Length: 311
Image 1 (cartoon, rainbow, N blue to C red):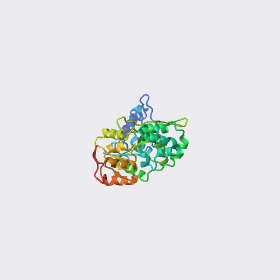
Image 2: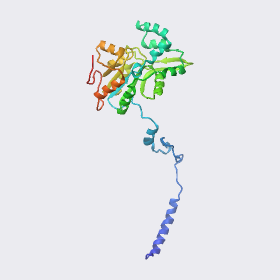
Image 3: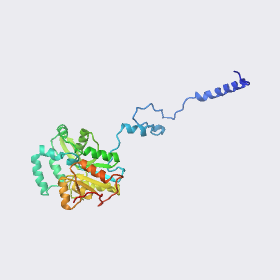
Image 4: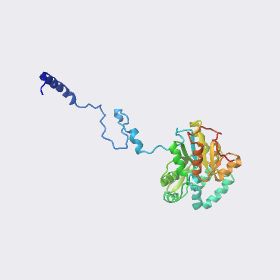
């Protein structure tokens, strides 16, 4: 069907298209030195810094390719923080003590006497016993494969992760062993520990956090770790879990709530320090669930959560 006056309209449309073509067909101008990025693989952040663009996929895909950060003492997730010993607490056996008992029994017996007599500090004892130990990565790996975690270790770790609660292993053992045990058992946690490297198959050890102001004498002072956390997180409520009077006692003394067994429990009760007995970490998790069903509490030195504290 023809419309009246269609010719002027057709002429106008032709002129419009002719004027538009140079714009449509004009070459794309790119800033010097900024070449458009090719398509990026999935699960990687696309960040074209030369063009000053924002990370287009950073928020949506990076989280798929990387595990969530493990809450630790620098986490800003809330007021509750859980500090847990490793040897004999998070694990069923004490790694260092078992290793020394099997391979260094003669030297260990002499050093234990010197330690009991006050001749050696806990860290000096460790240096005398383990520095230069001829026990390379391969036999150590086989030994560590036989170290089982406490039956409630995974549950406590998961409970803290799900709530965003800071969780950290405080160990007077060695970082190498903790890294390997995490890989063996498929768990991840933040930790503080002494350092172990190998030199021609022999152990070379160094302290993770000596504290001359504490009488613990350990290579990694747990009191210092908890106090440092409190300085960074005023009002934090700190829970300490442990089993040994040598390395755990100083940390337990400054915690808000203490779960103890073994020689740690005996020492705390003798000194009149409030603590709760636990058999395994499942009991600790249940106690924390019952005491802190809602938001993590605020706390501080000398303050303890309500609950069953047997002295």
